[in-house]
Length: 389
Image (cartoon, rainbow, N blue to C red; front, top):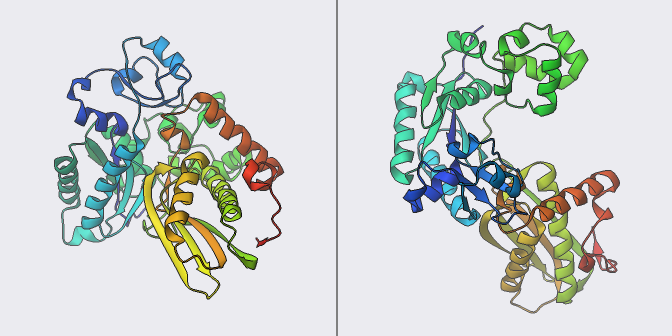
């Protein structure tokens, strides 16, 4: 098989914990848990020392404290973590010809062709050293032929390491590893494969692809390809279509500010749900208004990564108050969330209880079953005859 691509996967090690340790060196070497600090809180992240006790993200804080009574609890600060994440992205953007920000702490780089001018291992090593020098954060990378193998290589390079897996070494590298190492294999899929007697990637790679598709559908084919080191997924440029938006034009131009804010709330609910449904987070909010004379104005604000209505609604209202200065009739309003990355919204539930997480999950299940308009805030259910959706 001929491999023509060179893909790098960068991953910041225990990112939230590492940022906290920059500010509080006494946390180094200690079991640290990031999240809501009450018993009803949720674990957002934890150190390697805490993981040894069986603690993991999304675990109820009460259970985590029972597993490790000596753990140091830290209430998370998404604004701080977002700042460091943007800094790392800026460093990568300055050097890499093509990169994709996959999550708050992960980046993929397509460096195909650069081996003609640079030693790729040396270039990637120097970029990693640049990130460490400028941020103080530990970061690992895997360099290989595609996204899947590079990501797995990064996992094997951790903590704070680097690993190169060339084309001829891909299958020998993958074969002895657990199927858990394959990106996209969740607990349900893992249990199914284990029930089939599959433990290692080598065993999985030798199952006929037709059987995998018969048992697991199209996802079975994707998993089989990954087990065989096949992944044609491209590195998508960070600036490419990284936004969701909605806007509405009024049937009649209006100056009813109270009603407009109610509509904005409804808009935020709509596209926040879209973010959570696609497991995305936003870092930039934009509000748009168009006056009756067709003058159009926008105003945006950087925010800590989130996908929660109750965190985004105040920002949208603030931007609307700032942008609406002319006291003219308004024809159109709109909201856009941009700078999107993949991520679990639970990550930034530092100030809320597990009940808030459960509430969002329950409401989203209802929306998926009965439609987005089946559950809305009280302020968003008034007569909507003045708008055209």
